Length: 154
Image (cartoon, rainbow, N blue to C red; front, side):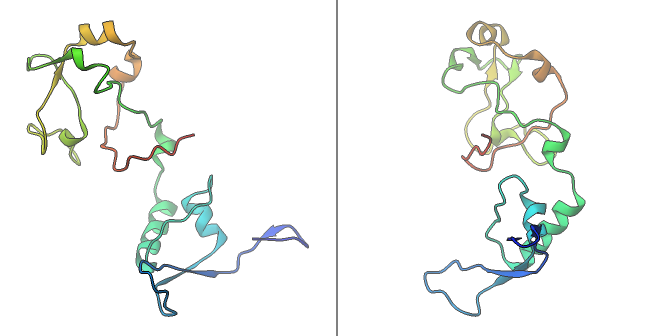
């Protein structure tokens, strides 16, 4: 991607063909990209998602005009391990609600889960099992359900 003569990044567009089938056709969807497009989406790892040209335009517009979550704060894994912390689980609805992914909706927490049962947690028992950073727990947070099983943080 660099021109060895003058050591600059090329601004020339190139095509990236997306093919979801076994057979590769000449007329498959292809994205016209630049190195800057890839840097916009993923500057750290220089990776690019397998998207159609329409999806690519939407992604680029979002990333060019939006703010990344990493610019606002840190992404943390939940404080409660579902196996290790199980002795702290309770049916007592006066206790704190354990926020599982199935209880988290787009702009609110659900009263009923789409799968499983709502679990409450006895904080005294939890603190005997595990040390929890209360600054994180008591601070403002954006809560979201993980949509993949992949943790890309190295």
